[in-house]
Amino acid sequence: MAQATAAANRILSLRETTKPTDLPPPAALNESEGGVKIEFKDVHFKYPTRDVPVFKGLSLSVSGKVL
Image: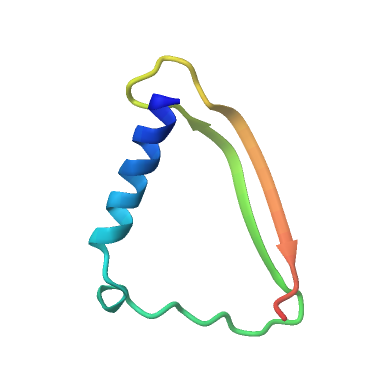
């Protein structure tokens, strides 16, 4: 519970340091007939402080139509 609380506090402290005016406006998605697709191929990830991998060869594809 203490680790979760500490992690949440770190995330919240990062949120407070960023002002909305400091961020660039989001880019608009252009309309396309085929929709949009986001794809990750063979993703490997582990935290620098841990030896246990979180992802090993993860592949993910998400597609949809922009409304």
